[in-house]
Length: 589
Image (cartoon, rainbow, N blue to C red):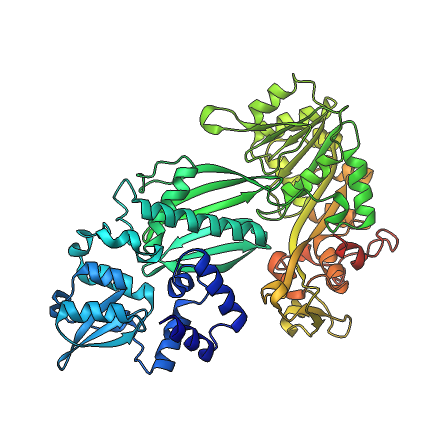
């Protein structure tokens, strides 16, 4: 059967000779049949495999969700046999039994079913996930009565073992092994691909694993639905969660040691209609980048470096979730870590372990809040304090007071841009005189995906995209990635920061003290040389680092205040206020 399967796979084009040879080698190393290896490891998607069987064996292809199954035919073969061979009886066809099979080349399965049914079998092909779902749907309670594998199951492969129902507290040894293998593979792939989040989402027929890479979710695996319980049990056990609790959300953490790195997984479960969804946030998988590799211009690096090396004051980084604020904070913090500096951090989630810094994890359940920690830290003789986020008036007041009292405070704030951060601090009760006296610099940022350098080529964006950014088609030479193996055919590889750095000049301080309108403050900042987000984004488009479409994805363009230098209603900044961006400098990471 293995030779027939190999020949079929090659003829159908579902797998290359090199991939097939590697699959055969790995299957032998794991003591699995080629079929089981291809299904479990997902080397060939189920639909492609089913279509290949149908085409090259001239076997009908069924979609079981649209097929009516004769109830009488279900009594012909027991559920144990259906599960063992991943098959489902459909109806009687003359004097034969029409049997949906995931692997119609399995002669032993056909022989066993013919023996049990005392009828010849006519195989049709269906996807494995559809068959497993059909077994559960059609056999109903009788399927639940036989969840334990038969005695001979110890000789079966992992894909032949059906795990217990979700209400069963103790998984079988076979289920634990499957859960271990799936967990190791999924987490290993996520770390290797640089994913920031792992989403495990159960569906009615299968389970989807998605990875967030470069800020965008991608489908990574589709697995049989019954594997969800085994994988979930393994994750909950490692995260020290209650594996019997399925009705309430839970949070936990898993620590990993990968080579020379300490990696933490923040685990969150959420009950949904289809089952528990799990999201794992990957922390510490990448090293902290240097300040000059984030995408800042030379002048912006100088401004930030000067602000961070002050003995006191507040440095605020703003932006939405996923904009890279914490990474920028860590990059600035690393420039101050030394034996002669006492660095203390207060974080809701410690994303990176910083040698030489005392890091505190807040815990709202036990009353360990940002504001409470900050007050305690002031008695610890700190030089530099990192506050993960200013969320409320109490934390804002404590952070500003610490900055006035001779400490350098680094923090983040949720605001659309740097000028909006000033309004946000006012909303939190910060007085204008305190804000202007304590604040060194305010940074707003976004993260845009970089064009893949392996497949970059010229192109012309859609006219509507150019219109939204106020760009003339003949003003620039645009580039994008056409897609290749190196970038998983997305056209992007890695990300680059888009920044807006505002220092409070005397003119801005005067406007802030008078609580002038945001538009007036913005105009003064531009006149003083500030390059706003849209301007910096367009500079990176001109430099060939990202695309117009990516800029529209990460930056709002529905407000006049977000417009770049093409807005005739605004004054132009000084010609020498910022040096041009160097694209080759940004690629050297």
